[in-house]
Length: 86
Image (cartoon, rainbow, N blue to C red):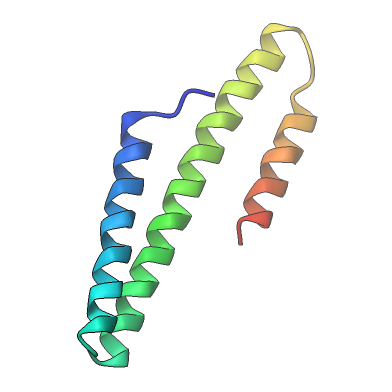
């Protein structure tokens, strides 16, 4: 699978958010602020996961259809990936 610049940029932003949370912890910031940032990180990771699975699913379905195959198994695997990511 080809991973896009957008996917990588999203992960770099998440990486920066994690560093920010670590700094907040070092600075002994309020729990509420830290948890808010952790929730934002989780949400961002969920969005990247959905993007990766969605693009992969689209590519795999196109490939299966071009081969004359039924993409049902590919769809099933994508759903399992999404469930596993939660």
